[in-house]
Every structure is written in structure tokens, then in C-alpha cells.
Image (cartoon, rainbow over all chains, first blue to last red):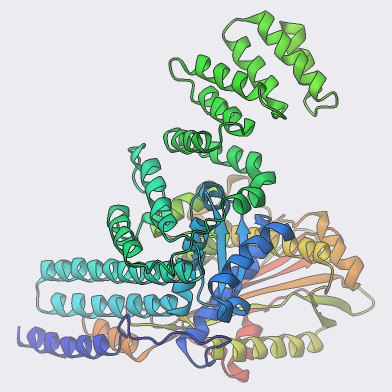
Length: 389
Length: 251
């Protein structure tokens, strides 16, 4: 028994030493423009690991290399933060989820699900500013130090608890430590929110758009009972809290600073040629409730864009709930009344009619499809449908 | 692979760009911890063709990473050690090949030709996938594939010929090494653990190497290394690790 207690004391001493060397969040200084970490530091190790991830990403086939789209995103970063413009490498990654991420070595991923959902340049600028905040506040290395310190402390604490014969105390220590990990990470997110907000407001973007993007994501999230569908939210402060904070902050922006530039037309023009691809990607998630909210929001803003109606129709066709066939047909017909509807509308319309036993309508729709795309890849398939009808 | 990515993302609560890599690391860790693995190198059933001239071997940049093992067992990559380890491993590989009937030419990334670079990168990724599959399914009896029990016939496919045409090499050698060293805190944990009779690992060296025939993409030879000792940061032990990894290399 004596040995046990004695060892517990020794281990607790080790624990204390470890905690004090663990590094404390918020204490790090901003990274300077052009700064590279010393090769002997833990930060250099993280940069090295990040470079590896970056190399893998570049050859993943998911990065959109289109110079125009890349220039559009890069110029927002340079407008937000001219002094760090050179240090940041942006990759637009074709992934249908709302997210952007920042690695400690200055490589940033912007996912197409975010590009698609942002209504304007100001909203995108706020999220990019948030990511820049992670970079210049060195959150990557700070978070790593917290994880390392907490995990080590946990190990020592559990050994100490085991030595003292008190297993359940160890478990309480574990829970406390895990709680610390998540709250530190939320602390970083709040800090990044602040940096992002300040950057966008100083760069002359309309600051109220920062609130707006959270509101529209909240509406999507609330439409579904599926937990954690947005990775971005997993460790972030709650959206309600963010919206409150941002609304309060927007009111404090001096009128002289508050720009009215939302960059709505610029953003629409920049992503126009990707609309179909990204909307199709989004439906592949088969998370119909948030997608329906998103598409209805897009239609409310721009009811004349045929793609929005077509993909809303596709959503109903794929979901197949009661009444969805009629909703799909109605959306397709709306799309067809507009200028330049996607030719695929005819094919989808034909499929829904056929499934519902309306052979004459199906035939007309398939014939219209082949007339619109005489050399379609699936011409033989459509012809075989026509033979069966 | 997308499904795997989503599952990992849910577990780790962060975006994952490279599920294959994360799985590879996990597989190596699992293999290092399970002791039940064959020790010998593996080779394809067909013997290598006799060569009059020395073989030319294209050395794909060895994927080396050295880390500190912190008290809890988390590994922290160390840039300085990695640079030293990388250089030591490349030097040791060069020496070893000179002593064998082979000459080593280092792979150089094509400059100003993104298409070619892209194809090369796909081959490297193919090797990552094939190599980790061999590691998982050939060195772990519990995961042996029924169709592969008596055979060793893995290939990167005919796309590998491109490297032969461009470099003139007969074979490509791929090397993957991970080495970790206990921090002071980890040493304390190992020590205290030992007092209680618990064997807690303090730093480990793991890796694998494969030789690919560039005429057809076949993996003709494969070996893996798991060691509780060794040090890639200094030249002599690095040479020992390379010798041990390439034991039985059929060149």
C-alpha cells in the first residue's frame, strides 16, 4: 500500500511538470508575413506534415485548376489581407459540403459546397477571413500543443489514479481533459470569427453578410434531424451564439467603415459555369431536406435561373416521396419556360412521366431530348426507351 | 474511398484529404502492435530474369518521417530529424546498391509538365494503395485474402512502363519509413509502466520497401520492418535499418 501511494505522488509530480510545459492557448504571437518556423521547432514538424497533405491534395484530382475561379478566390484573400497574400496558397476542392480549412503552413482548402452556398463575395470573404485568422493566430500549432499537453496529462493522471487504486477518478480526469480540448478549440473559433469579421469590414465588405451566411446555414441545418451534417459546425461555437455576436458587432461598426459592397454580381458571375456541376454534386449527398432549403433560397433570390428549378425537380425525382412526381414535373416545366434550360430537363421529365404511366408525355419528352442533343452519350439508351414505350 | 473518408471524418471530426494515408498509418501501427507476422520478405513466384549488365534501379524519393513520441503516445513529426533521416536513408540505399549488382538513379520530378507529373503521382498513389494492401493482408494471418494465400502477384499495372521509357530503369524501388523516439515524458511513462509490469512501447521503427518491375508494373519483391530499436538520425544505424529492410533484395 505504501508503495502505491508513494508512486502516486511521483506520478502526480510528473503530471504537474507536464502541464506547465504543455503550452497555453492564446499566448502565441501572430505569425509575421513571410515567416517560416525554425527547423528545430514543433511548428516546423507540423509544417512538414502539412506540406505532405498539400502534395497529396494537388494530385488528388479533386482540385479545380481553372485560372479564372482561382484568381477570383485569391483576390479576395489579397483584398482581406494584402500583407499575407503571398503566404497563402488556395485550393478549390470539389467537395459538396460547406467548409474551408487552413493548414499551419499557409495552404487553404475552399470546398465547392461553400462556394455554391455563399450568396455573394462578402459572405465568402467572411469565411476566408475566418480561415486567415487561424493562420495568423497560429491556431494549428497551438491546438496541437493543447492536444499533446492534455493527452500527456491524461496519461499521467490515469497512471497516478491507477497507482492510487482509484480507477473511476481517472475517468473523471479524462472527461475534464476532453472538455478542455473542445473548449480550447471553440476559443480558437471565436478568435478566428473576430479576425474574419474585422478583415471583411476593414476591406469594405458589407459586414452584415457575416450574420447572413450563418442564418442561411442555420436554416439548412434545422431542416434536417441528422446530427453533425456540417463538419464546419462540429467543434465550432453554436450558430445561434455566432449570429448574436455578429449582429452585436455589426452594430458597433462605425458608419464610415461599414461598406455596402456585397459583391453579389461578381460572385454569381464567378461560379456561373459551375452551377450545374455543383448542384448535381450536392444532390449526390442525398440529404434532401437541407438541399431543398438551399434550392428554394436560390429560387427566391433569382427565380429566372433554369438550373435551380431543374435541380429542385431532380431532388423531388430522386427523393420519391408522396407527391414528389408532380412536384418534379412542375419544376421541370418551369425550367423549360426559361431561356437556355439544361437539355437534361427533357430526359428527366420523360423518366418521371414514364414511371407514372404517362407514355405519350414520356415519348414527347424523350424525343425533345434527342432533338436538343442529337449526339447525346446516352442516345442508344433513350432510343431503347422509345422502343419500349 | 469517399465512404471511408466520411466515416473517418465523423470519427475524427475533421476533414480528411487522404483516407488511404490515414489507413496506412493505422495499419502499420496495428501490425507493429500485433506480433503475429511472418518475418520473411515476399517475392513474386516467377524468378527475376538473369541479367548480364547491372540492373538500373529508379529510386522513388523515400517517404521518411521521424517523430517524437510524446508521453501519451501521440507522435509529433520533427522536421530537423526527418531531413537528416531522409539524407541518411538515401545515402545508405546508394551504398547498398553499389555493393550489389545494381546502379541507383534518383527519381526527379518532371518540371513544367503537369500532365506527366500527374501521371507519376498516380503511380505513386497506386503503389501506396498496393503496398499497404500487401502489408495488411500478407503480414497478418487474420486478414489473409482467400484468393492470395498461395500467391504473391501484385501489380501497379502497365502504367508503370512509362517510368521505364522515361528513365531507362529496369526496376523502381519504393521505400516507406517511420521512426519515432520517446520524449522525456514518454520515458517516464515507460518506466512507471514497467514498475507495474506493463510493457509500454517507447518509440518504434516501422516501414516497408518494394521492388517493382517497370516492364509490367509487377511487385517482384516486398519486405517490411518493425523494430523497437534503431535510429535513422545517424548514418550508421540508418545503414543498418536499410540493410535489414532490403535483406534478400533479389538484385
